[in-house]
Length: 191
Image 1 (cartoon, one colour):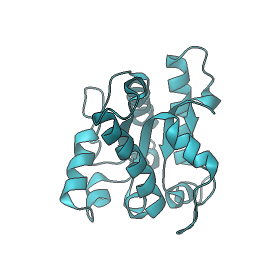
Image 2 (cartoon, helix red, strand yellow):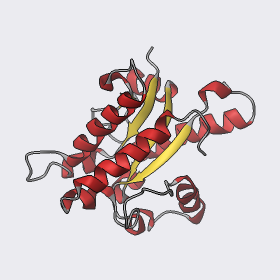
Image 3 (cartoon, rainbow, N blue to C red):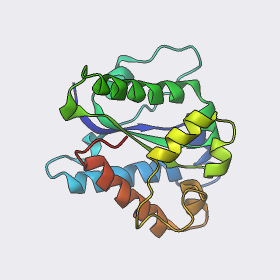
Image 4 (cartoon, rainbow, N blue to C red):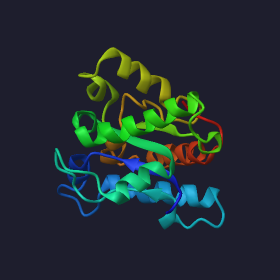
């Protein structure tokens, strides 16, 4: 059993589309850069071991692999790469719900407070388009969890991270990655 700093939750369709027609994959680039930032904030933890991410495409109705279940159980933070396809995905919704359940158990005293779960949504897609079909309770929850601090790139989250990559604004992507890495390694609950 491994303990991970974060569980990287993303839509496999977004991952596929992040590659289309390019030599690189922007979502992959962001994940790798985020792992390096987290690792640099946690001496002794190599970048390859700070995060869990499923690389198999889960079909509707498929059972989760034991690896996904363990990754969800033993990750401190859920980093949700939000987009309209993420929010329409049953599998992504189950991952998000799994972390919400851990938080509710913590509130009831049924969960180890030293391993308090946190959810950090990152808008991969434009925030307005991503949240369009959500009910108001879920929209408010995501907005409450969203990074809103000094240093967030100008225009974020209305301009999603994917758009910064498409526009060649790698500095904005790195800036958001650094802020996110700092939030991941914090010990205080972030919910």
